[in-house]
Amino acid sequence: MAGKRKKVDESEEEEEAVTSQEESEEEKPAKKKKAAPKEKKAAKAEKPAAKKTKKADKEEESKEPEHHVEIGPRKRCTVRKFKGKVLIDIREYYEKDGESLPGKKGVALSAEEWKKLLENAEEISGWVDNA
Figure 1: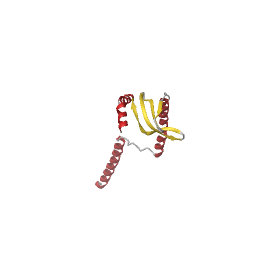
Figure 2: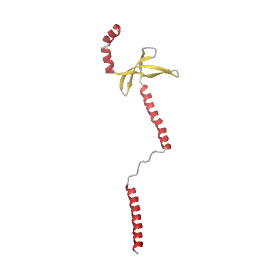
Figure 3: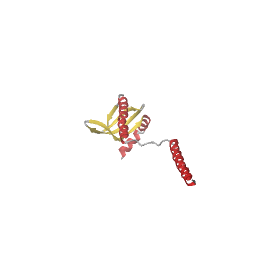
């Protein structure tokens, strides 16, 4: 009888162990699942909508009058407002589909920087003449 009793006790212990494992797994916080490829594609599809609003914001900003001076065949100095600040933008432009677009090469000066440049214009002109 002792042998049978021992087997019954072992099976009860195994059941208790399995039950305690299940309970401890339920207590653990659920792991984050990685997004399925379809979900990732859906998330990417949502991004252009955000870009449209940014583009609309840019169009709204660009509605303010801009003044520019051509300083070379593909160079232009433009005065514009960006995020509420006045900028003097000296930039190279390129042609695409018959439209003149600003390139990466250039500098945008704040009003303070522009004034500082003008204060030193005579000295800079002297350097240019003597170069």
